[in-house]
Amino acid sequence: MMIVAPELAIIDHGTTLAITYEDCIKYHGRTNIGGVALGFRLMQRAFADLSPAGPPDRETVSVRTAFPGLGVRDAVEMIARTTSRGAYHIDTAMAPHSAPEAAEGRFWFEVTVDGHTRAYVTASGAVGAEFVAIGRTSKQRPLTPAEQARWSELKEELASRIMAAPVNAVVVPA
Image 1 (cartoon, rainbow, N blue to C red):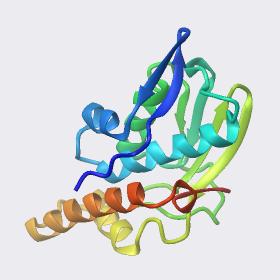
Image 2: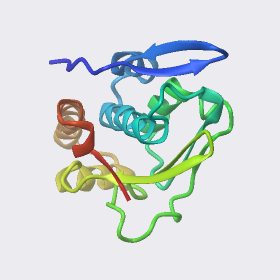
Image 3: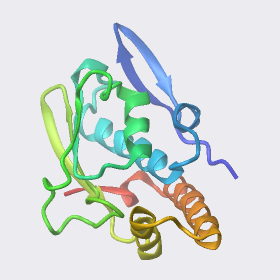
């Protein structure tokens, strides 16, 4: 089941663009669908907090993160073109130890919009322990067919949960 999320609005060279979660999936695919959902929700939360008067200009958005996940990166790229502009930076050592652990790095994000910066983390329980454990295993060795099937299932479940939950239940200020 596909959950239709609200559109995100962003200004690109004077034109307001409406970008949906489905657009982000079209850009990235389903390989890291949980990360795509998380990236979309991260931008929703950051835009609401850092640009409450209206859509931000793409050129003013940047992200620093301790999470190297490709799904998050691609969702943020689709929305704000941060990777192609050199405004998306990964440093797995930048997060405090209190930030939630991921399969690799930590779920820590610093988003800047028009000079205003706020740090975010995933909410407690947003990403389950089994998800992180299998993700870590996948970084250490090839998964067995059964593990791979479960990993794919967990990614889809995570995406559905993230998109069904209120954004404030997924991404919270650090």
